[in-house]
Length: 218
Image (cartoon, rainbow, N blue to C red):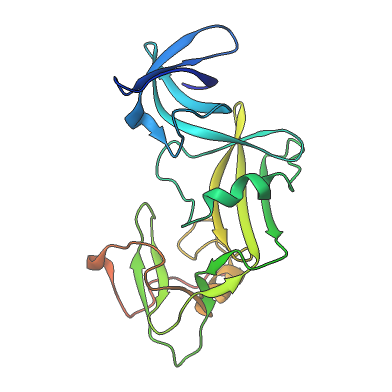
């Protein structure tokens, strides 16, 4: 069960510590259960609680309307180098108790590299299954990432907080064509866009030059 608490005690020599809940309950943890959180972290953390032990401890962020936001407990879809910008981006987003939120935040300067890029018929593209995905993504070999001032965050309401489904540099993209929610618009988008090779690990045994997607009827 996921709980939200605060680190109140650390023991550097033993590489362990204690998290307290608002109810007064305490949970022990080992430093190797801290996922991107320093032991000295003073803000709330979210964790999986079982038998007075805390595992999978993640940082809690805040939206503009003070809703709690945290990463997935497993298979994080935070793209490279976005974590340090999340607090600033989320403070510009009001969630208003919506079930899902998809928002692109624009910064006054370039903040990172967009790895989803437009393609043409002349580009060297291939398809492969990325880690923790259920179908083939489209990649391009001869393109490089593009500088961008945009950060896109997709959230879903989950019990006491919002869970980050994904966060990446660049404007919002459609779901990929292998997704059960994909429509003709998603298919057309990804037939003209691709991820720069190296953007995400993929299974080399799944690489193909043939498009594996079915064209949606709608």
